Image 1 (cartoon, rainbow, N blue to C red):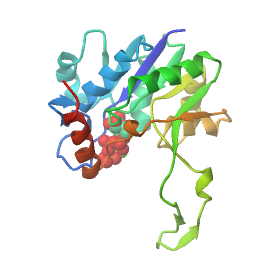
Image 2: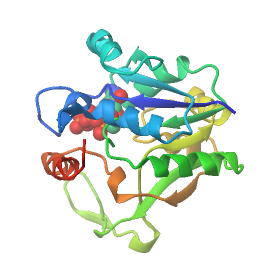
Image 3: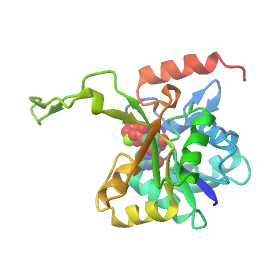
Length: 221
Ligand code: CTP
Ligand code: MG
């Protein structure tokens, strides 16, 4: 089965606050987008990569990324961007969706997600236990509940799916979701977790960027 990785990289990076779209912020001189794409290629389990970027960056991204990587324009919300990527991945049997913002994801994690799909799972997400206690709150900030922490997991990407299941999930999606597995859950799909990797953390805030740069600067180029 042919594996295509979709890389949503069309976000604005508001929380990072670097003044440019987040995927183009660099770690040791290399954009997060490039690092994420290189990791997918290095995993050895991906046949084709489709990146989804802001429309005005398409040409510059095409020249920055290796030949063979497809580049399409994203949309206002992550769900719109992934949908644009899906339209460019008609020939996939298995699909990965991997945030450019998880630039330091170890390639072996990517290979493990694909191995689970090849073993017959339909939907696979890397997940880690949470260290903070999580509370639900109302609009005024009053606590409405404390879910049992041992049952909670923080999920990462790449998230992997059979192409048919992810397409059906997106066809049914009537609102936005913060992850792709969430849309699969809404159509009754069974989503399986595997053990994630701390290095697959999403670079979201200035503190995350400081950590990512410290980690990247420790690596040989
Ligand atoms: N993304 C996208 N299209 C969007 C929004 C997000 O492709 N309209 C991508 C981002 O580029 C990122 C991934 O989805 O790689 C995860 O999103 P997030 O971490 O929220 O990134 P941003 O939306 O860029 O950040 P923020 O929410 O702080 O603005
Ligand atoms: Mg966002």
